[in-house]
Amino acid sequence: DGDVYKYYADGEWKKSASGKSVPIINPTTRKTQYKVQACTQEEVNKVMEAAKAAQKSWARTPLWKRAELLHKAAAILKDHRASIAECLVKEIAKPAKDAVTEVVRSGDLVSYTAEEGVRILGEGKFLVSDSFPGNERTKYCLSSKIPLGVVLAIPPFNYPVNLAVSKIAPALIAGNSLVLKPPTQGAVSALHMIYCFHLAGFPKGLISCVTGKGSEIGDFLTMHPGVNCISFTGGDTGIAISKKAGMIPLQMELGGKDACIVLEDADLDLTAANIVKGGFSYSGQRCTAVKVVLVMESVADALVDKVKAKVAKLTVGSPEEDCDITPVVTESSANFIEGLVMDAKEKGATFCQEYRREGNLIWPLLLDHVRPDMRIAWEEPFGPVLPVMRINSVEEGIHHCNASNFGLQGCVFTRDINKALMISDAMETGTVQINSAPARGPDHFPFQGLKDSGIGSQGITNSINMMTKIKSTVINLP
Ligand code: G3P
Image (cartoon, rainbow, N blue to C red; front, side, top):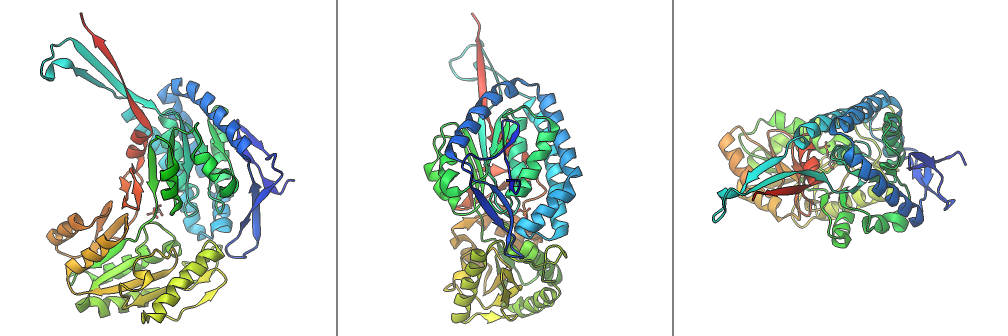
């Protein structure tokens, strides 16, 4: 039936033989907004076969031609910004302007990846043997980067377009084929984005997008023998995937508990602005959101007052009206956030605003005087709730940050650059931002998490390199 969005395989839009669909619930209305195909394991097998076949000739397609197609896809993606953004608004309740930004940022990411790929993949290495002890100058080694084969991309709901293209573009420029499994919330946005790649004219089978239930095709995809690399962004599922995946390169980003350490000499206005932006953008549903504020006791009252004043100005409501705070992605997510709030309440946290929830919509909430025995001191709410913990020394802040299982990003606010650098050095996170909130972008910067936050490093250059292997040919002279 025409109500169900088709999946994409072999250059065509198809209905699943399962005859089943997966509903996508609009977080705002809590009603079914779209339906996508519930693909079967047999359909996944076919996609993998096609991906393998298409990759062989794609790898022999000149690099400049691969880049040209990516530039074309980027331009089409930007042209389609409005319709894709509309899906983001309906599926994941992303505020209207941010939804457009996500698509434009994605087009830029694809173009940059094409350019970067042409540069770094256009270079190889030449080595001679006599630099290693015992060797004469009798061997010449030529090495270059070759594709891995089929890359499986699994992006999360919070950036179903941007975190898909951050995997698709590097995979393709490097000569790989690509199978996309979009998140359920965000699947239609992802299908629209794939449509742009379809219009650009990539070869059949090179790109596919399978939708469906994780329980039916999740493990089947990640454990599929046809997959040569997995790039995943999401939650705990990533840990399970990394345990089950075969001997293939993995790129994983699994969330964080990004700490914001505020020293006594910090510019408190700048700090408060960044805490509100970092903690409450897209209602806190970002891996890189500020998830705990660790502030020196002597400036805590002043900082909390400034943050409170800014929180009061956040607009709360629907994504169509471009409100700052919009409904969180699912009801179960809202329930989880509420659980963290209630736990903090029982254990005596100070509520800077009244807790308020209607459906999936949770009003922004700052919790002061949070202590280590509260769940919210450690767990990521992925919602508009931000804990503040007061510290008496920098060491106490670093200790709390490093006691977390996560290690994605962190930030420190101080006017003393030496202190900032020492704290950055001591924080066990993939990135530390000095005097700004954590963020992944600009998208060519390296992006990585330590500990349970991930495996490998992302960012355009790192992703291209990760999706290739070195191949050498050695010329042996007589
Ligand atoms: O997974 C990363 C994402 O949640 C954060 O990206 O661009 O909001 O920092 P960004």
